[in-house]
Length: 477
Image 1 (cartoon, rainbow, N blue to C red):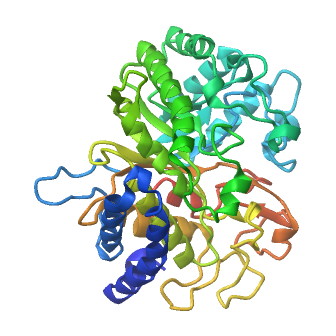
Image 2: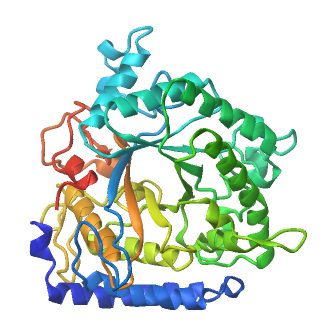
């Protein structure tokens, strides 16, 4: 069913009331972070919940005297394209056409990369997101060329590498509990880091290419990505609610603030017009860490606002989507929570650089969301209808369209607009074999069995999943 048929006034008002109940609990938790003065911000976030009953359009118009927000732009992620000449499992399922004989011959790895980018071009997204590593700049240059040749803009996400840290900074798996170990960002050698990334940037410029935007780090609010943060066990102990002391906040700031400043300086040497955003925030409750960057006290007592260095703030959303109402409430609540903390949001925008309605099922222990028929019985590829009748059962394409319209566009069009400018879907060909999907029955013919598809293609054929690509690119309403 079309979204315009689903969104009537009565249902919108119901959604507001349900979201308010959910968000009031979140507001209570945020009020505990008194060192970051969240009281005013939380109240502003509560007021912004009225967004869910406001009609939306493609470009949001704010209150009188406020300029309309820029048109929303859509992108897609396909990780590791810039770090691997040869793409292989687990980054591609064994059944992928890109590991078939015609793409798996010796010396034919570039053909495989081209095949993946050609597939991505069918989505007609405006942006492509990927990172680059510590290896040869040739890989990154090659990726940028392939992306631009297919009419997309490049968002490059990058972070620290092992070579950027001094001996002794590494916390191994046994000590950290992280699968690959971790480093505290505050221990980074910024000179070594800048030398490495500037070699990558120089190679791109020498090839006559450019990068349109940069994301400084990836989920650096997580301990296993930045050991200056509390561990996941500590967050779990506090039920994923804000609990950090001023000292813990300053530990984070002492690492990320100089790292951000060094990154921006290096980027501007080679790409002065590039947009720059903070890392994709993984935990909505950790948004006060970004807020703290606006009031960093130097040793001499001077206060520096490091958020002035960036054009926006990264956000990652992986909602629980047992029902579409769960998804709408969860993502709207997360965005409102983050918006209440991000400084200068009238001038800087939120970039949702990763989002997926089904991926959280991989790690949260819940059944696969999209495995039911219209009656709520096992044996389809829909989620469940909510008990209020707000949203019927939907497939992933419907859930993506609803997120674009009922969350992003309505937040942008509210009386107090939430400045969201970009939405990136994660990712192109993600999926995997799992007992979770033993009973999924897809609405199209596929040779896959017990396989959870949460990208935009059927990995057995490379064909676009019906409706999903158009929804991801923001073309379906």
